[in-house]
Length: 442
Ligand code: ATP
Image (cartoon, rainbow, N blue to C red; front, side, top):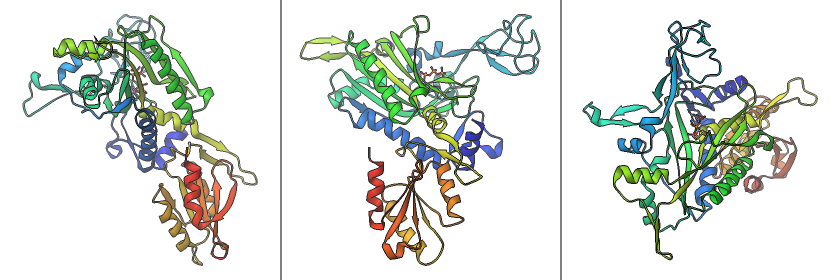
C-alpha cells in the first residue's frame, strides 16, 4: 500500500486534500490521472446499470435534502458508532476497535495508543452525519445534513421517476453521487474517507419476488467486478447471518475484495433486500402515498427494494491494488513497475513517441497523437531514452505505446508496443487510430 500511495502522488492519481495546509483528515483529491481512472469506472457502472438496460432509469438527486428524510430513514436516531475517548492521550477510538484491551469505562480498559489502563471513557453513541444550517439564520429549524448515502434521494423520487418514465415494476433507479460520513476512524488511503462517492441502484419489485431478484443482483454485481478485471481469487461473497442483518433487512451480502497486507478481505459493495422499509417509512413521515398500481391485475402495493451499493473510491482502490505489479526485465538491472489496469479504465490509452527529436519524427508523432486524441486520452513524450518513456507509461497503466522511428518516413509505418506482453507490431501510420479503437472495443 505504501508504494501505491507514493506512486499515486508522484504520478498525479491522488493527492492529500489541502496538503499545503497540512492536509484535511482523511479526505483526498483526485489528480489528472486519478480523475480519469475514477470517471472510467463510474462510466462502466453507468453503462452496465443504466445505458445497457431498459428497466433502470438514471437520477441525480441533490445532496441537501429535507431534514425529515433522515428521521424517516432512521439515520438521525440510529446512524451511530460507539465512540471512546482516552483521558490521557486525548485520542478517539471506535468502541468496537479490536485493538482496545479490556472494557472501556472500567479500570481494565487499556488505550491502544498510549497504553494506559483505566483512561478510556465509556462508549457514547456518535452520529456519523455531518450537520450544517441552511439559509442565513442559524437556528435549529434550519439544520440540514450532508447525505450519508445517495439511496434516500432515490426513494423520495420513486413516484416521480415511475410516473414520468411509465416504467412498470420490476424496475430500478440508479445514481452516482457524493456521500459524507464523519467516520470515527477513517484511513487506509481512499478505503474509508469522510467524503466519498457511491454508485447505488434501487430495484423496485413485487413482494414475494424479492429473493429471486436478490440472487439475480448478487450474481450481476459479482460479474461486473470480474469484468472490471479484478482477479477472481481476490473476490468473495460474504453473507450476513441472521444476527448481522440490519433490523429492516431481509437478506444482505457483501462483495469483498482482498486488498492484501493488513487490510485483507474487505467490503467493496453491498447487495441488500430491504423489503418495503424505506418506502413505508417515507409514506409515514411525509403523509404521501408511495404505492404502485399494477393495472393488469388491478392490484395496489408498496414495492420491496433490492439495492446494490458500491463505493466508487473503494473500487478505484481495489482496481489499483489489483493492477500494481513489479517485474524483472530480461537483460536489464532495473525492473519495471506496471499498473495492469483493464484498458477500458486506464487513464491514458496511448503514449506517442518520436524515437529521436529530429528528421521529421516529432511532426509525424504529433500528427498521430492529434488524430488519436479525437477518440482517447493520449500522452505525447519526446524527451529522454525510449526505454524510460515506456517505463513511465507502464507505471500509469497505459496499454499501448506508439513509436515513430527512422524507418517511418520511408515505410509509412510505426511500432505499437503492448504494455503487458511487450510484443511490438508494425502497422501503417494511417491505421493507428482504427487499430487502437479495435483493441479497446469490448
Ligand atoms: P463499512 O462497514 O465499511 O463502514 P457500510 O457497510 O457502512 O461500510 P454501506 O453503507 O453499505 O457501507 O455503503 C455501501 C458502500 O459505500 C460500501 O460498500 C463502500 O464501498 C462505500 N463506503 C461506505 N462508507 C465509505 C467510506 N467511509 N469511505 C469510502 N467508501 C465508503
